[in-house]
Image 1 (cartoon, rainbow, N blue to C red):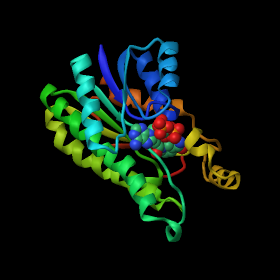
Image 2: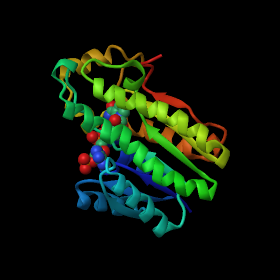
Image 3: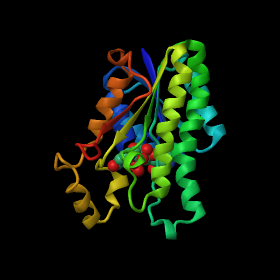
Length: 240
Ligand code: NDP
């Protein structure tokens, strides 16, 4: 049985990745911050073998606890999916230092924190795979998302550096860059902005969490055994 850690698994893309991994026969270590009861109900519903670990990925100590709890419980870690992420959108002129730091602390530093602690274990195992959830915004930028774009571009650079470091140890590291996926994160976006975004998507529709989850499962699989250091977009052609 393979073991996967998914951060921010309580809802949205993270939850969908967890479900897809359970279907692919992974045992799960699901990180969450809030709504433990809801996550427990979801795990029961899909009948997954899962350990739930509460924690804030922006905390170095919480990330260390997550990696340790996973290894202590299952004795191996095959996959880490750094999915937890937040937005605090506003124009640069209005963006506070707190808005910038909060987004980077979760999206970029959180990815560093979890990767650092899990990589130590994968290094010793000499196997493993890491998939970081970036964004097309980290590739092309977006008005009102300077903090988010910086964090997601940072995740791409981080992915490539770590992929080079871990490749000799048999550990692959890739990033997925979703476009606009319908979740809680995008629910809050103004309808006129959504329509403007839609007009820039060649496929003419928003993506679904499953579109991201399917790619994560593939990148983690043996079928992707010669793929590392890549950024794969799931965006209906939004950024080319
Ligand atoms: P949601 O807001 O629906 O879910 C985000 C999840 O991350 C929540 O479960 C949340 O938990 C968790 N989370 C947030 N901060 C932390 C933290 N510090 N520690 C642990 N967990 C945390 O967003 P999506 O599912 O849409 O996004 C998932 C990922 O995909 C993010 O990295 C996002 O940036 C990326 N993405 C999403 C796109 C989209 O269009 N939706 C496009 C491109 C990338 P809680 O609710 O408890 O805070």
